[in-house]
Length: 197
Image: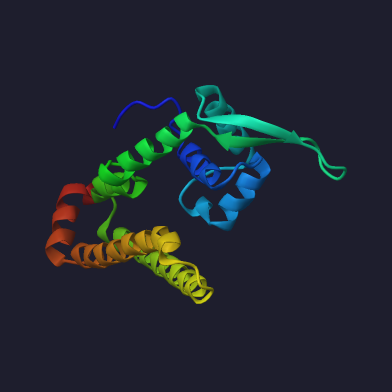
């Protein structure tokens, strides 16, 4: 992956929103929330304004006009520049084509999990499995509702991806629980770490 002037994933979402039409940050935030972008990208209103400032400084977006009506404070409308359009497509192309290790926290837990007693591992993994099942069901319901409302499939692929990851993790955790229940593993753990607890 190449070095980028702005690296926050929120910046990519802002560029994508401005591809549709120029708008002010408040409207960008409203649309991101409406698209459930907060399921993929962590952000708040403050971080959104910070990213808009970074994108402006980098020349990826530019102030188009300042609007004021009697009910609201003055708002600056931003537009995507040609440089920003190029950055959007280049950055997005990199993300789609090149797998990257995100170092998920669960991966860290798995690499160190052998220190937990097998029964505790089973208990914790069972809790995780229940939560994963709930999350998967919520995504299924949300996706079905969106589909029923006529939302085009391409706008739901992030849900499909999250669901595929959840289903793969559910399968993995289910098998892992069974592995921790194996008498041979319980004996080996007791001989190695049992006296430490």
